[in-house]
Length: 421
Image (cartoon, rainbow, N blue to C red; front, side, top):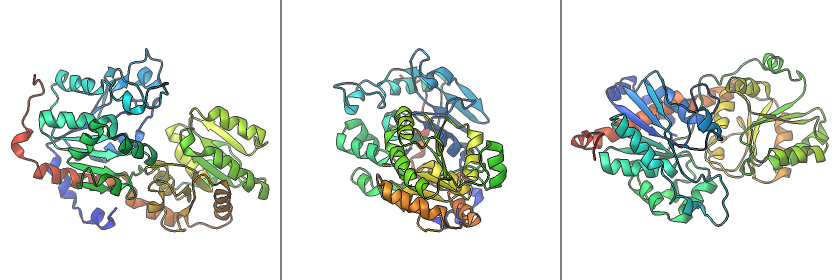
């Protein structure tokens, strides 16, 4: 990200879009009360954009599951400020659902999310000037079809972790290829993967994820008191879905080595997921129940306390895009320990902010954890460094992208009727 850009875009440019409406298409979006927090970074990114646009419309298709899935159970249409959120129900085969003899590519043929989005546009007589799609599938594919029908520019942020992006490229699925080729501006959340996408579209830039103002330095001891955790122990914190890709099995192996050197070290892991049972059993077998704790779901308001109570934040991912928790922990002034995955090394460019090691290597991870726990960190410097990644700063970059697209897109193509046949 060009830091100079953030300081050279004048505030008056925010006014250029004040009479415009942004349509956001996303496969996940938190409900009003945050019982369901899927893709909460999309909602956080919208916060600074609210003051840029006259209105923002979010459409997030939800799998009809007879209320068995949490998003189907909790997500109902709502409005906050000038943002309207819609959750049309429909049928599709989730990528996360393993089906024998059905590939992810084949699942894309049984997906009715475009129809669900189109129905909301027609029913609500929705008019918009610009589309921002989050993730390639299904959002960018849906946006490409809407672009053709309504002739409005499309921005797509490719959030996928590097493994999923590589799989999408190997698929050569026509809808995916079209989504990339016909997009007016592609945004990848890291620089590393930009060359992979250049053959589809040269109109691509890199803008990372960010963090909100709630992630700021707080008193460590007070945070520990609030969370009822020991005041004097060294504490390592991690937060992510408990899935294989996040590498928590390797973290447990690494922590075993760290704890041998300092038995008072504690590790708290927040998150839910299919790996929870396996991780619990691994902790038990290694006899680490008094040092490593699986917290389960951590409410939003507690995350900032955990970030501030920790001596280190660690994310042992095997594959990544550019993890939001990294920016949140840096915003709190907490050093970040991560792996050479996705955009992590692009952000942790200096040992002043944390360390990066090889993925799936518990020995290397244990080494950097031990080194990090044994040194003093300038938490104020870390927090100051992080300010360039605030959602407010990211919003300024997006504002410039939006403004350029709307200025360069033929004005007569904006006019359309949402009740088109």
